[in-house]
Length: 196
Image (cartoon, rainbow, N blue to C red):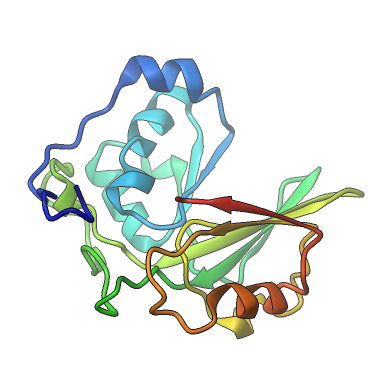
């Protein structure tokens, strides 16, 4: 109901543990673009049940701790990091969150400290700053992934991914979004629309 006026920010967060078990796999790492409910809601459960390391903003770190994820599994990043995992490298890119038609966003804000309780409602998960990621397989392809539809062009220059998973915008508040984004990414050969 986000776009119909029926949206309730007090909606309780819930995890469908069976669905996560059936489709979540056993990741070694989880990369969080931002901490809104539709990006972070299942992350603490998945991290706790698989032992995966969670990479995200300082807000993701604080929310992860509040949700019971051990600090040893949480890696705060902010953009600019180039992390080597042996057979692949992940570059963390500082990004921007999508803008709605009013040039704003749902639940802006960051968590500058660990909340006193685990997140319980959708409103307990603010945007928390936004990241994008580029994964490059040694000797292979590179893929750029974003989870929100805005960006800082300067942060994307030089990435030139082979594949770009770009978020579809919900409004035209960001000027010339697709053309500017594809130009900044040096026109990748394959583009996959995500986050409809």
